[in-house]
Image 1 (cartoon, rainbow, N blue to C red):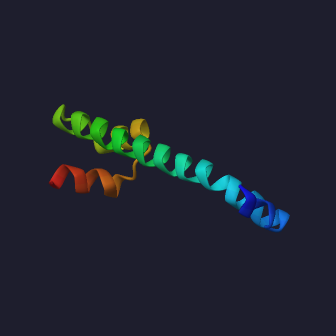
Image 2 (cartoon, rainbow, N blue to C red):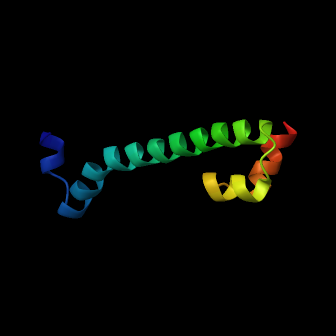
Length: 69
């Protein structure tokens, strides 16, 4: 923490925000992964791609890729 005290205020703020930015990024990736899992289940149930895109907020292109895998 002593090293933090020597940093300019702007850099201190940036360093303090790093954990939050990593948390948010991980959270977003987790949500996307879960939406992909839901999309796969809906594909298996023969739901139309338009509806899957609306429910999961994934693009139609992403859903088509998942369907072809």
